[in-house]
Length: 92
Image 1 (tube, rainbow, N blue to C red):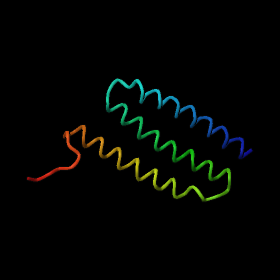
Image 2: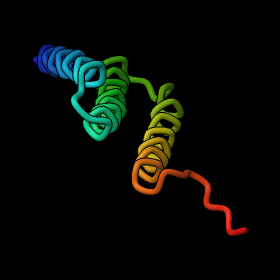
Image 3: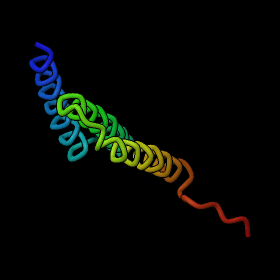
């Protein structure tokens, strides 16, 4: 029963990932695309977490950590770029 629920959850996450990829491709604005990319990162972390539960292993925990850090830094960088137009401030 537990495995069935996990497979249903993986299926729901897969559908959500496909819909988010569509939003990234045809998003009306750059902000929509950035939000969709951030949501894809969060869903991938959940997807890998469910796979770790199903396989009863913690091998992918490093991948989850790196993916989370990259998603956060990437979203922060793109948001700063959209707001100010630069990523690294140079005080010359």
